[in-house]
Length: 310
Image: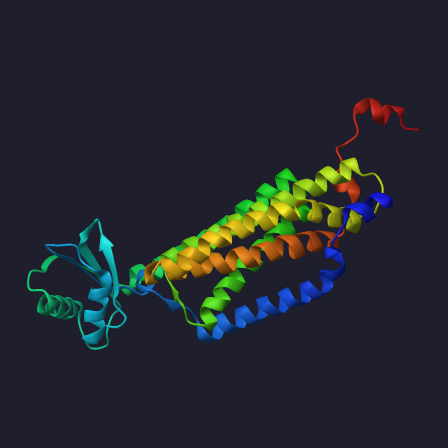
């Protein structure tokens, strides 16, 4: 048993019950919060008015936002479209105001600030389209989870597949729960970030599972918990470095990316942290709890070896 004492530095499995309880509480709380408060869906899901205008010179988005905010349009989403002279303004539906009137008001406000502003196009996205997007987004997450579960089952073993699926569902659920709690806008970019989080978390989990299978074949002594601890510790430096560098980029996006990608950056930030936690504490611990055995991952004996058995 000396090899295990030298290799294992952190006893992750010793904390598996406590971390499991924390995760269960967090998931239940997320479900309750989502059910009670719902999500603050953006225009991609709720529908609204889209106005594209053209400036003769480069348009400063910060100035356009200030002009719209001072004219009672603080919720307007402003971004460049194609070139720095073309600006896209998106607005949520307003009670008692039809889409055409709302678009005319936006154009009037912008032309009052700069008479040279030209209207390029007006589009209206109905709530039915937004509802379909929300349904397809939820379906995309579900299909991604099922496909990854099948992949892990084929590559490893069904206990790993179930554990990975639970860990992967755990990550986006808590991220979405936090978005619901603080009513951060949930749009298509956030949905893309959630799907990216699922892939990121799976990658970390696969690395750990691969090392577990390798160690089961190399180390013939020690318990399942010993091997799981060794495997997690051996991949820990890789996990920390990958997560740290990813977080560095995401934090820069969060701070300097502006309001347009704030939700995307926040979802990635939360997802990387929670995904790293789940790949260390949830995926492996759940496989152990389901009765993972050394025999489950050892290659089947060769025919001549079977013949030699008494």
